[in-house]
Length: 201
Image (cartoon, rainbow, N blue to C red; front, side, top):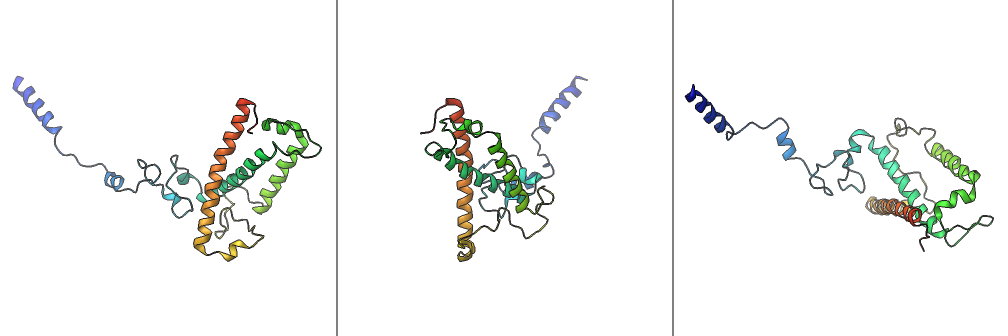
């Protein structure tokens, strides 16, 4: 009995050093393309082909949502944030006639009242509905496969018609990068003003 226990212990310790077969999918994981921006994560396939793609999708949104819808959302928030950062600064120096000047930009909505804020809500709601022909849900916004996210056909000076595809991609990347920066900037500006109560300038 004692010799059997010794033999079992020797065999089990030897088995620990024996090569084991790799689990299914291990070779695929080792050969997977890694993200450019987060090198320890695999490259999210849903981002491929989109302007501004650096492989940053740590929560895998592109795997669960329509990428066209995500890009449309990013562009809309970017454009709103770029306008907001400019407006946040301008309102410290310019006051619309008929309204009181406030240094604390977060008090702006209370100074103009509910009616002005509702004009923005309903005005932007109508614009959203109109630009999407009434299709405002994720399921039906991109029923038309030719529809390009963020392209509302607004080009009054005709710059887009004069650009090559490469030049247009450069401009789209500039808009996206500036928009991403503006989203971070307006968040910082609002919270600075909220925490300190002081104007930016």
